[in-house]
Each structure stands twice: as C-alpha cells, then as structure tokens.
Length: 543
Image 1 (tube, helix red, strand yellow):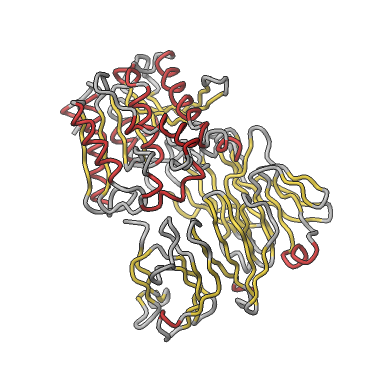
Image 2 (cartoon, one colour):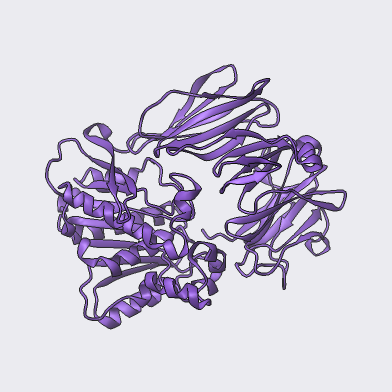
C-alpha cells in the first residue's frame, strides 16, 4: 500500500477494533499515545497543516470522545520542513512529550514538551536524537565539539536528560566507529543499550552496560558468517530481555530471545524456500574510478565455472545499507535456474557510516554510479558474466541508479529493471514527497545545482542515435512517494525515440509496487521472466 494510511484503535486483548475508538482517515499521519485516553496527532487537518513534502506540519493533543476538530495544537513547524512528529514514554506517566522537527531530510530539532512549555535539546542539527526513560541518546553524523570535548561522527552518546538540559554535562560515549565498523541501529532495555554494528557489511549484536569504569560492551553471540544480526529490546521499560534476529542470503531469519543473565534461546525460524547447499556467498572488493575500494556480495552455484546470467542489484542512497538478507524469490527465481546474484555496496548507502553516505551527495552523486560501474566491470573481468548476460535491478533511488546506467553505460549491460524510479531530476522536487529529498540530490531551481543535476537526470540524457539495452520500467498508479509520472514520461520518451522498452504500471499498491502477496508474486515473476528472456537463457522447463 501507500504511505498514507487509515488509523484505527485496536484492542489487543479482544483482538478487535474498538467501537467508537480513535479513528483517522487516510493520510500520512504521525500518531502516538499520550495516556489511555489521549493521543498526539500529526495529520492532514486541512489547509496549512502539511509541509511541502506532504507530511504533518503541526501536532495536536486529541482527547477521547472529542472531535478531531477540537484537538489542541501544541507544535507547528514550517511549510518548507520535511515533517514533524512526536513520541512519549509511559514510564514517566506521560508527563513529558518529545517532539521532532525535521527542517531537512538529514537535519532535525528535538524538543521536550512539559506543562505547555517547550525546551529545545542542544545538539548538532544533523544528529539523530531519541529519549527513553529520561535518557537522551544522540547518534552523531559529523564530528562535534561540545563543552571542550570532541566526539567523532558516527558515535552514539547517552546522557541523563534532565542533567544534560540543565548543565550540558553527563554525555558518555557508548559507541565510537572505526574505519571498518559502524553503528547500524541501537535500542535500549531497562539497564542496557543494544547495538547492531556493521563490520565490513556484516552486522554483529552487542549489549552495553554502565559500570563504575564507564560503559562495558560485550558481543551477544560470536559469529563470523556473512549475515545480518539485529537486536532490539523485548520490554524496554521493565527488564533487560532482548530479541535477536539473524539471517543471511542463504539462511532464513531466526528469532531468538536473550537477556543480561539469560542464555540465548531460539524462538522461531522462518522456513527455507530453496536448497542452499549448492550455493556459496562470497564478498569481493573492487576499485572505483577515484581509487575507493568498493565491496560487493556474490551468490553463485559452487559448481559454476563459466560466465553466465548475472543479476546485479544496487541502491546507493539515503544512508541505507544493503545488508545480507534472505530472499525466497531470488533463490527460486534466479539462483536455482542457474543465475548468479550480486549486491553492490556502493557509496551513498550507509555501509561504512555517515561519511560513506555523504561522499555521494549532490554534486558527488557520480561516485555512486562510478562504484556500480566498477562492480559490473569487475564481474566481467573475473569471468563471472559478460555484458550481454549481465542484468541490473534497482528501485526508487535505485531506479535513478538504473536510469543512469542506461544513459551512461548502455554497452555494459544486457538488461535493466528500473522500478518505481526517479528519472526527471528537473521536476522531482515538485511531485509528492520529492521536496524532502533536496538534501540528497540538490535543488533544480538553483542554477548552480541544476548544473550537476542535469548530468544525472536520465530523462535529459537519452539520445536518439545511441543504442540502449532492453529495459523494463515498472511503477504503481497509487505510489504516493515517487510519482508514477517519472516512469510514464520516460517510457513515452523512449518510445518516441524508437528505443525498446517494456512497461508495467500496477494500478494498486504504493511505493512498494504491490498491495498484497499475489500482486507481489506477479511483479517478481514479471521481472524474472523479462530477465531470463532478455539475457538469452530462457528455459521453458523451468516453469
């Protein structure tokens, strides 16, 4: 479905919706409890209640059995902001509310609302803040000097909230990154801080507890596998138990429970959908144009020794890491039919922390594209595949990546799958949530930024007299994040210029491209059918 949702109150004991309970019509809403009979709501209240990006601009207190129109405004952002939102903490009796205002996609302000007054939390504008049980957590994006002490970008800091607001004192460093290890996520139990740390794109789980000598950190479970291990609190306000999940490209997710003095116990494992015994997962590194080392994961049959059909996936944006993840569809639709699957960890993502992301912003976007090209060329040089057998896939920001591969290196690929893409970078900021991404890409209304934006706007770089590989472009009519107009106008342009293009627009679903599992299965089948037919290795008996 879309980003806009209907909000209804649900009784988890009776397992039914509450008759006459809280209800919000479809909108991009932000809602949290502020007591049994009170909500803090950000939604579409009418004129001047949404930002230019289409997200809440105001927050209101809404009491049970009163009309939404009588809710009381407690905070208002500004029209150019991305959004505002709130959260609360039941352990202090909902005596405080915590408010986040995001002027930009990578900037924020944090406030404590108490007794109808606002107190702003002092922090760098690009740091992420979270408050739980009167503890303030700050995850830094850049180096920060505060009160004569320096903190490294990528660090996680914690302090007593009241002490910090009153005096600026009490900040402790719980995690500091290295060249190869970065913080992917964190959570908190009653007495511990839980860390998911990526070490060369393999995540490990840690628990940190404060002692007289500072914070003591232990690895929750020893593993050297190419896998993704994440950790989160089980009941953060009352005990130190945690939930641990682990998955890899070839092993489905396992959910376990543990605690400070509790052995880790497996609760559940998802079923396997393909036989992984005949496949290997390896990590390789290649060198991008500017000399930066770029890692990528490769899944391939152990017995494979010749060049064959290969699918290369990429994203490279918004500090989102492409971590090992089990996919039944990749296994059944690609690996078991003889394909090699590759995931590129290019710049713009979060695999090596904020700097890895920041290095491919705006005028440096080309670095992400150089990285992806370097991985593709390395696969060919290593004999894994050939250009005519190499297919590539990406969606959303990854769709923009695909569009740039189509226009910049059409000779390098045999097929391209471009899903829910951004493609016209001259107007992206005027459509749906596009204005919120200007911190990532740039502002096309500024001539100095359009100078570099036009170089990676695929819609503006298609040539009539150039040969291009077959491309499948997909979108959703109801995508309320990236406007389907990007895909539509690109397809129209390619048809006008006489270039081969396949197009599918799903009339349901949102930015994910499908609304339910049957639609998802169809979309996945469509992609693999296109790839197998186009890359010249279609097998009728594989159906």
